[in-house]
Image (tube, rainbow, N blue to C red; front, side, top):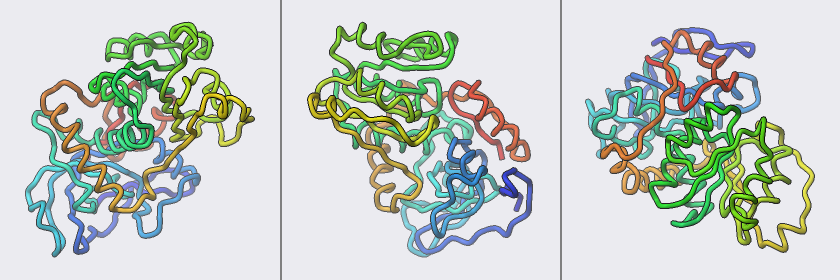
Amino acid sequence: MRAIEIAAGALQPTKRPVPIPTDDQVLIKVAAAGVNRPDVMQRKGLYPQPPGASDLPGLEIAGIVVATGAAVNSIKIGDPVCALVSGGGYADYCLAAAAHCLPIPAGLSFVQAAALPETFFTVWSNVFDRARLQSGETLLVHGGSSGIGTTAIQLAKAFDSNVIVTVGSNAKCRFCLELGADAAFNYKEQDFVAEINRLTEGLGVDVILDMIGGDYFPRNLRCMATDGRLVQIAIQNGAKADINLLPIMLKRLTITGSTLRARDDGFKADIAEKLLKNVWPLLASGSIKPIIHSTFALNEAALAHELMESSRHIGKIILEV
């Protein structure tokens, strides 16, 4: 099969044997694969695959099941599915745990379906399970125009929460507002701490989903509400920051974070069940949708990574396989 592998920090086409599913896996003929920042980090040697995972990049796919393991009875050959995978998505065929596969929502294409797993699993796990965002609360999303950000905006609004985002341009501000965000601030031109405290009359936000880290951490503390929750899911500005512990104590703040790729199969299967129950009906009805910025052919994966690193995109970047 065709595949894209990492060699000396670059992506290059190669040929690999078609993998064979184990008892609880399915083999998917890939129609489309999502491109995500963890793929870029892996290419740079900063995010090695977990033990036992494919060394090929690619954490989310959509396609047709062409083989099933002996213990799989929930999915059959010929089913169109999208799946969260721990690697291997940049290829003609990819293995997935059957429990991490979801049916493609009615009306969505393979390209749209490939934009779902990594972002929707991440947002549900961190915003709703870990941070416990409630109806009427306010969510702040840094990187609001990213795949994660556009997903978080729509899901938070679907469950009756308020959303504030930070983005890097006025055009991205306008897009996020049109998507449903209640407020959007251009961090290159505005002090988001001052703007949020002005907007909330000093009360702050209840939940922050942060992909930036670094110098954003102390600034996040300054615009969090009493009993606020900060969830760190990436560290684009670095892993270290100066911390003033006093606001954490006085406002009873919760600071947490997570990564998804290395979590066990049962954890991911639990998220899949919650998405199928709570979110897939919203996708099927069209009330929420994946935001696709652009698509590339499989052999153009390097160009897709260039676009990802430029941060010019709004929403998801997809490889059509």
